[in-house]
Image (cartoon, rainbow, N blue to C red; front, side, top):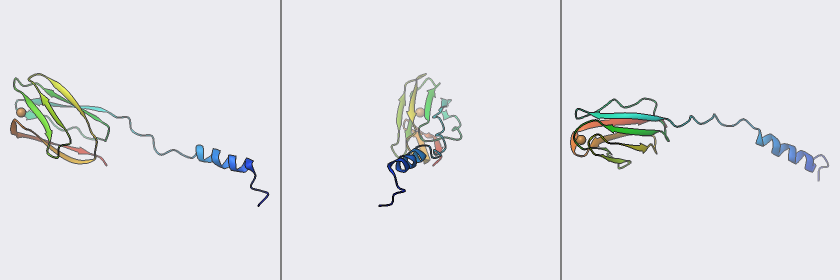
Amino acid sequence: MRPGLSRRSVLAGAAALAVAPAPPAATPARTHTIVMERMRFGPSPEGLRIGDTIVWVNRDPVRHTATARDGAFDVDLAPRASGRTVIRKAGTIPYICRLHPAMTGRLVVAP
Ligand SMILES: [Cu+2]
């Protein structure tokens, strides 16, 4: 038993761990808007991150959906309605309107 390794030094070590530099503060989640208008999706926001929210706004007089091709989300919007989804994964996520498959877009989410 090393006499130098006292209970005190063990506690000091634990305290040092507790104040070790934290990883960079997580970027606060943000909210982005994508407008559906005139049978198109508006531009996809830049700088998307996991945890961010997308607010989908349908300004058309017809129903639309925002449907991820991989099933990550599926928002069904009556005319003039809006809805929201939270981004749960990184990568490129193509999406369409199920009712108007010519309406397409993609989210690019940072890893
Ligand atoms: Cu549509």
